Image (cartoon, rainbow over all chains, first blue to last red; front, side, top):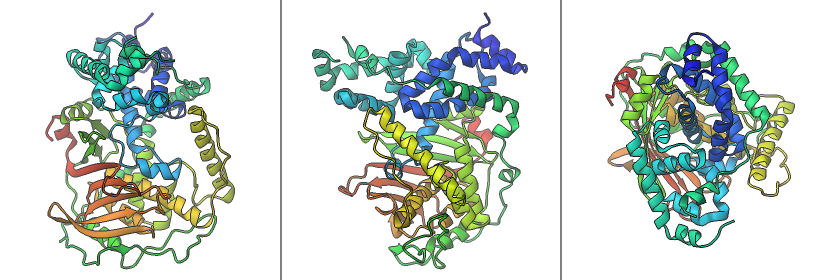
Length: 184
Length: 344
C-alpha cells in the first residue's frame, strides 16, 4: 500500500484520486478532532474547507514523513483558528458577546466539561499551547513528537509543554479533588 | 486514574455524520476541478486605487454623537430598506478622508493582542495580501513560515465581507449593506424574496436547535422571523458584527476602512464618543444593548484621523469597569516577500 507521502507526491503530478485516498484514510480522525474542538455541526461545516486547504498546500508537505495525519491535524487546527476568529452570527446576542473574546476559544470543550466544571477551570488556566499539546496527546492519541509536528514546534518543546500541562493539572486543587473522587 | 485519564473522559463526542464526509469530499473534488476559482479573487482585488496623500485632519465634531436615523422606528418587514446615512456623520466624513490615503506594499499585516482571562497576552499575526491570500501565525516566526510555505487560509466568509466593504466605499451603499449582512450566510437574506428570507431564517433556527441537541438540552420552539424593531435590531447586530470584523481584518486597506465606516454609519444605535487614547485622538464606536440584544455593549476604538482600529472590548451590562474581553490591534502595510523572510 502506498504511503500518504507517496500519494501526495502523485497528487502533485496530477493524480487527484491519490489525494482523495489520503483524505479517505484520515477523515474519521480529522472529523472527530474537529467535533471535539467545535462540536459536530461546525465540524461538518468546516471539514470540506480542511480538505481544500490541505490540497492547496500539499506542495509544502514534507514527504520525508510517510504518514500525513499530523500534518492534516495541523491544517485542521489552522482552519479552526480561522473559524474561531471569524465565527459569524448564528444567534444575534451571543455573537456580539463573543466578538472580541477569541483569544483562545474552546467552545466545544466548554460544552463538554460543563459536568466537570472543576476540570474546565483547571484547563482554562493552562497556556493555549499547553492545552493544544495535551489535547492532541490525550484525545488524538498522537505521540508528543507528532503533536509537535502538528503545532510546528520541536519535539522537545512539545514534550516540555505536555509536562507543564500535566503538572499544572495535577497541582490544580480542582483536579486533585477529582482524582480523589471517582468520576463517572 | 491520573490527569490524562480525566482528559480522556472528555474525548467522546458525536462525530460528523456520513453525509458530512461525503459533502467534504465533494467540496474537495470541486476545488480540485476548479482550482483557480477556489483561490483567486476577482481582478479588482489586485488594483487598489493609487491615490495621493491627502492631509488628514481631525474631524471637528461634537462628542457623544448619536448616529443617523432610519427615519422611523419600524422598518419595512421584507426586505428592510437600508438606513440612509447621516449627512453630517463623523464616520462618513472620516471615510471620505480615509479613501484619499495612499497605499503602499502588497499586503496588510494585522497584529492582534488579546488578554486572556488570567490577564496574560495572546498575540496573533495575520497577513492579508492584495491577491486575497491569508496567512496566520502566533509569532513572527510562524507567520513567516506560513507565508513562505504558501499556507493560504483565506475563506469565502472573509472574501464576502471584504467585498461588501469595498462596495460600500465605491458603490451602492444599500447593496453593500445587504451584501455585508448576508455575508454570514444566515439568517436574513436581505434583498431576497419573502420566501427566501423565511427559508434562511428557518435554516438558522435549525442550526440553533442543533446546538441545543448537541448540549443535550431541551430544544426550545423555533422562533418566528422577527418583525419591526426586533427585526431591525437583529439585522443591525449582524451588520455590526460583520462590518467590524471586516474593519479588523482589512484595516490596512483604505477602501475597507472607508466602506466599513459608511456601513456602520447606517446603524442608528451606534454611538460615537471622542476621546484620547495614549495621546492620540480616537473615536469610540459603541454598539449598545439594542444592537447586542441587551447583552452589554461592544466598543470599537478607531484612530480619529486614520480610522485604523485600535481596540475592541466587550463590556457586560453589570460590570462596565471590567470588560469581558479586550483585543488591541495594530495594522500596517507590508510586502509579503518581506514577511516570508521574517522581516516584520
